Length: 246
Image (tube, rainbow, N blue to C red; front, top):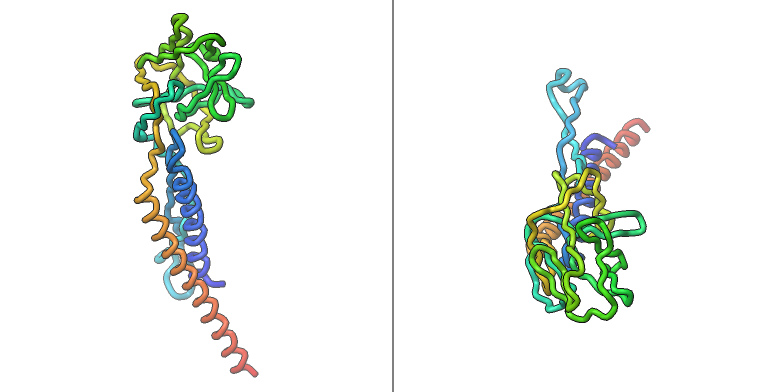
């Protein structure tokens, strides 16, 4: 296998990775609070040292997968009318208590348990500003949320929904498609803007993602054809050498 094939295979490897990320984005286009992922590639340059060129005068450019990162841009707000659906406008994340500890999310689709606790769809309890579970009284019926996170019922103020942020959102580690683990110190936001009865939709642009996926599939096919043609060329060359020597 020559260097041309190795270079093409490095390209195919990164194309497969990019297609996987795009496909995951598209599958979560309707997931509340989902943040699109993107891949970052770069060239890995290797100096050629052979008999056809002076040492160091030519390079081979391999493709390498450098990282996958999230786009934390705002998603479109969608009206639902559910009093426990909460959308974040601007920066910040809800804090929820999971089996692995406190995690962050932008998915504001919450529900109320029989004991009055507020949880997400996976059963993770929503936390207030002090890091305690948000809990209503079982007999409370009317739920009202102010833009600053103050949660009230007919009995009065029940809690203040916490909203945290980090200095660099790219340090967050994704655990699934909606939950993030903070690797640096979080802090409570003093100025927050929440919307009751609304959800923040995914920030995936389905049209753009679909177009990119189709283009990647075409590029992958072209590169795959190149590998196959190189394999055929090398096989034919070897056959001719064997015939000449026999």
